[in-house]
Amino acid sequence: MRNWLLPEYVEDILPVEALQIESMRRQIIDLLKVHGYQQVTPPMLEYIESLLTGSGSDMDLRMFKVIDQLSGRMMGLRADMTPQVARIDAHLLNCEGVTRLCYVNSVLHTVPSAITKTREPLQIGAELYGHAGLESDLEVQRLMLQCLSVAGVNQIHLDLGHVAVFRSIIKGAGISQQLESELYNVLQAKDITTLSELCGQLPGHTREALLLLPELYGDEKVLANAFNCLPDYPEVRSALNELSTVAAELRAFVDTIAFDLADLRGYHYHTGMVFAAYAPGCSNAIALGGRYDEIGKAFGRARPATGFSMDLRELARLVKPAIYPKAIRAPYPLKNPTLENKIAQLRQSGEIVIVELPGQPNESQICDRQLVWHDDQWIVKGI
Image (cartoon, rainbow, N blue to C red; front, side, top):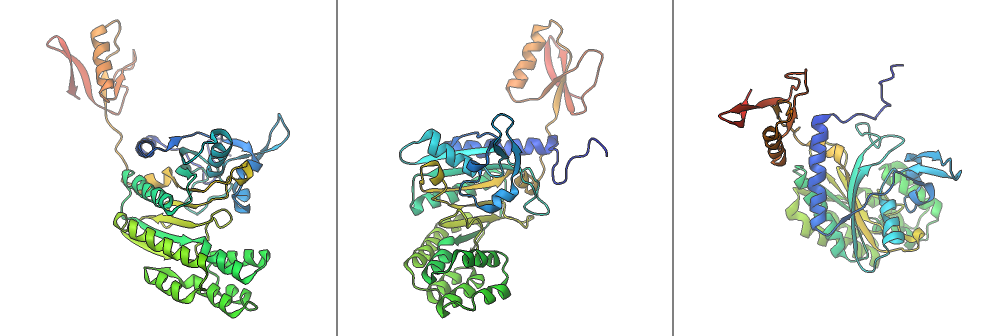
């Protein structure tokens, strides 16, 4: 086996892409900062109990696990940073009122989430804790769309859903936890045949509502159909009204909006509205988020929470590749204060200046200019 081969779905980031990703990272973090989101950096390793808090069994399967040689306990390499940020909010910061946090770092997955995905996404996101109203959902979703815009991703399609619709139908029918889990799985898979079989013994109005959910995908007509056809539960009406309000507020920021009332992504920890952004050139969602009010419960603080995350590596592939900037070549400044000052000035202004090492003339291939001595001063001249 060649010792330079990397594992499947794991890859290096080379200079041009790395520069583009770093530029995106800085712009997004700066945008989040001016909106009041404070950056945190959780550790890569934690005990698995905290990493799995509120995230469901699917995260357990996606997580690499190791034994801590100091304590003998099982640790995990984070597969998602949201549980870590919830722990920081609940246990370390413990602030009253609203807390806004953001983060950016690598996460690791045992298997890729899609055939074109890496197992080491560079996750960036924002979380808002301490507010249960629709205003915080709107703030987070607007912010997600702004982040995509500053990253250079255009022509956004936004999908909106609400897990309270499915939850209230299940609750109203008194369905067992096992059947609820089976219904969730087939709805996620859009398996209409199995869904019909599972609904066979349910009361008529519940059966009709569950069979209707996969069809409730599309434009504003979906909400009208849902109001008319779904059970008249307060939770259902409230969820549909929230979707309608958010869509009206966000329509100016996206190209298209659709509603998907069978979207149960993150159902094990989401408690309200869920959303996903799509862009041309990528079949998978490029940003995901939603409300998860119970995620901090295991840390002793079940605060309202909503947020979003995205993969910077995925975003970089959607944007026209940057051209690595050309540099200025400078001679080795052997005890030459004037030359050293000129190099420092150029670098301070943002120019890349590469100093030739002794015995290696013309070493750099990325230089298109050079520093030369002319008329008693150092000037930049094309090569």
